[in-house]
Length: 572
Image (cartoon, rainbow, N blue to C red; front, side):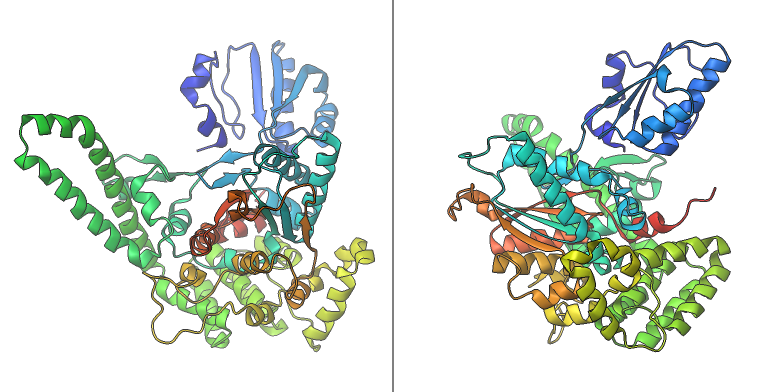
């Protein structure tokens, strides 16, 4: 499902005299229409595609009107390409400021999956303006936000640009009672580990297995038990899904079987009914029960399908290896597991993910291991992945320790240099060093690995670690928890230093700080570069525990596979 489908489906577009719909990635069939309207993201590749169509029409002597609508905004570079291709005068350009797509009651997405690669790999800042405008829009509707916290270079730039836009617009939010009191901005590169771990909450597993797109999932014949695929919207309106989405997968089957027994009991009530009661039952309850029954059978089918796929992939062994890496024990065994995974050619994406997790948790691979794993990977999956390794190194996902030196000394020098305000411009030169993860030290400082006596109770979890089977509390969520608890970064200086700084905490003096206001219990968590369903589940849990509510704004929903795919160079 595309973002447009969530707003206007085909039938609505047809009512507005749209003749035919084509995907931009394939050439349109010969059309008799005398008008073409392109609704596109501002991408150079797309501009060349449009230019080819216009030029082909010119060659054949065909006369049409062409309109390009850029969403969320128009970029000068796109107009330059149209001019170079000689079609700028033949097209009219417009802008559709479509920044925010609500996927659920508490999730808003900008649907910009390319943000992660564009900013963190290419160093392209163009989407920061879109983020700032999205924040300006939310602030005008639900603000003014009283307190703003954040960490990361992109978060800081987005916040500063948003404040500049606010000053320019001079919108009068003063005196208005806000609905959202706090906002927290975080860069994805502050916490790669959480995004790389296998998800085990139900919604995360559905995303990893079937790919949730724009809040909708395609369940194939293996789930529907028929020869048809079904599109299902996964949100709070789905009564079954809303109750299991944040649950650990081990609890889901039990819940679904109990639910089916309850449904059966409600159906069985009709046996002893008289005519009047039966009439009421049919008119008021039956439709709802049938809908619930349909959803229940779909989610049971999805669970069975997930179980089959995960059993094939040695899922338990993989989780065990991941947990060892997170805890820093049996690292050699885990390395051997990754080597075996590569040699058996299980999955190029999964192998990359495990290598990245090993690298980040170990603060970079020792040169011998790096060369060995890289060689084996290239032999198993092809030499074209040389570029992939280059990309992963640049973003700090898969790095090599500098030979013969203690990294901590180098890191402390570089982090001092990079966090120095005057040294902002030389970050590129030190990128690979500054992006060492320091995961082990941060984990110890924040207590990310819970110490558990006996079994961790996944049915009645006591902390956010349940989203990873009790083995690890997501770093991103722990930072948010700590900062909100302390109402700032005081006491977290060492953690900030290990994360390479760029933190901020700002109170808006014009907003009345009234602790009794409901808005003080509402936090807008902004993830720049993507957010996983595991993080969403963890923060929902934290919200319940602390009596507050989190609203999520993300550039896109992500997971480990999407992150790895964005690093792989598309074949020409």
